[in-house]
Amino acid sequence: MAKASRALRGRMRSVQNTRKITRTMELVSTSKLKRAQDRVVAARPYASALAEVIADLVTPELAERFPLLRQPAPPSKGGPTKAALLLVTSNRGLAGGFNSNLIKEARRRLEQLEAAGYQVDLHLIGRKGIGFFKYLGRAITTQRIDIGDKPTAAHAGELVQALITEYEAGRLASVDIVYAKFNSPLSTPPTTLRVLPVETPVKQKGGMKADYILKPGADQILAQLLPLYVRNQVYRGLVETAAAEHGARRTAMKSATDNAGEIFELLKRTYNRQRQAAITQEIAEIVGGAAALEG
Image (cartoon, rainbow, N blue to C red):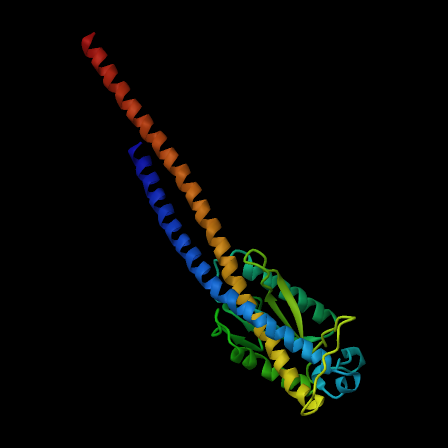
């Protein structure tokens, strides 16, 4: 009985220590989530305004002059045979199914592109995605683990600049990014976004056309805005994934903390029952001994 009680006390201490760790990680993720969410909120208005300006400037004539707007022919008709896929994952785990869902979405998109006849170059951001595709033995074109949960516009530029050059040269058919879209801390669905070719944002019907005075001309402005738009799309993917990671980790650690609390209470009740049974047994033995002496 004493040995079983010692084992239960050891398990209770272990569960309590685990609960302290998961609770601390939950609080840290909650703190980081607020800052990451602020970056997402700050990035969205700029991206929307940029899309509106491009939609107002692009005309069918201009669309044919800019490689970033041009839709390449499929491989069967002599178009480029290579496509690029960017996958954004985290460097750390303990976030529930966050990384596995992103990897599953990337594999789905990879299979679609390969079924269409493309040879896919993988560009991986985050240890979890890199580790998975290395385990599969897939060739990795580029890999980055230095971005972490505080991405910047400079990071996005570094990731996409070479891809823009390849696309403009006609060696790439498309560029997709797989990231976690941050709807709320509890809703972070894995999402595939087509980055190249640039899909011209659709203007709302019935809306008033913006009255711009263009200087220099629309072609010179678009030459600057289109690469900026592509970089901004990748930047949004990075910041939304960073916020989604903290949201997923906070949820996972809260669930782990709650489960640890339930296990501790169960162990505590079991320990108290065993202790009470031992006390009852000792009392019964004392009473029985006293009765024997009196008899």
